[in-house]
View 1 (cartoon, rainbow, N blue to C red):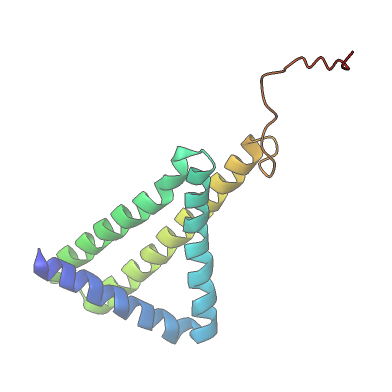
View 2: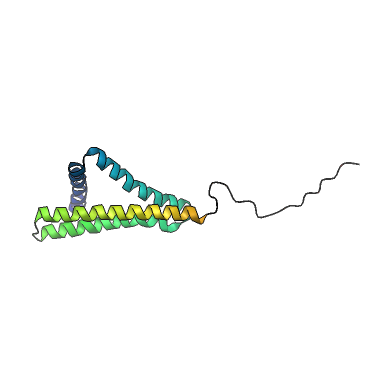
Length: 135
């Protein structure tokens, strides 16, 4: 298990370096901000009362681990390293993009579901107040 995690984290760092080489520093930072923003919006959806908003974060973690398992399995089976790396880079990019869009969609849905989420709802109980003057 230790070798798997070491390979997972080293590939995660190498993937970020390859993305920086392909897109440049500023564009990569913008892409990472957008992707993580979508996942954070999913967490905001959970806070707003939409429990399905946690799905993007859970799916991101599980999907990335499964993606790396398939990468390590392909490399241990003798696959070409460059081809495997390119294919898994594209799959990881697509996974991050899809799940960040899903998180943003859950956040928008949770915001639309509530009537006016900026103000608290009015109280349900009504009290009759009879004010009389002292005699």
